[in-house]
Length: 115
Image (cartoon, rainbow, N blue to C red; front, top):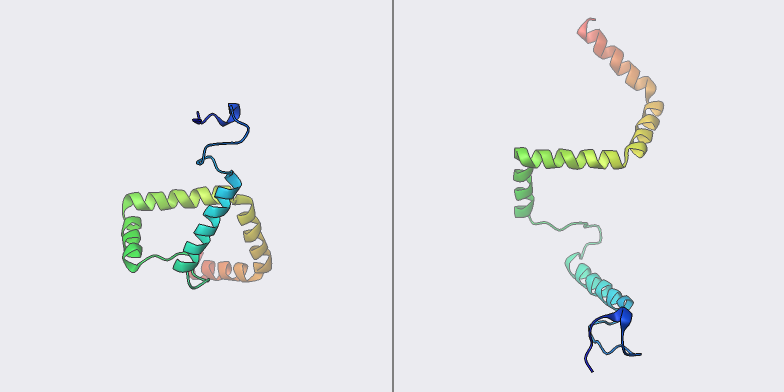
């Protein structure tokens, strides 16, 4: 018996292909393997990313270049476009909460300029 790997039109009632194990079973296995690896590398649960100082320095240098700065700006733009409504609501709520302070700072700046 030889499998033709055409699972939708299989000739056999019971799958003979060892590689075509149940998808759910494979996903569960991968998740548990990933959890074991994560628990080994991230001993501190508060740590989200573990980058070495060398890697962080490399990223800083890249972002300082013109290309890196453009990539960073584009990422911020995309994030803003994706979360625009939520960001505008947050800013509006802050303004309503601190309106008097903001207006006082504006008046002070205008007075300093002498306009």
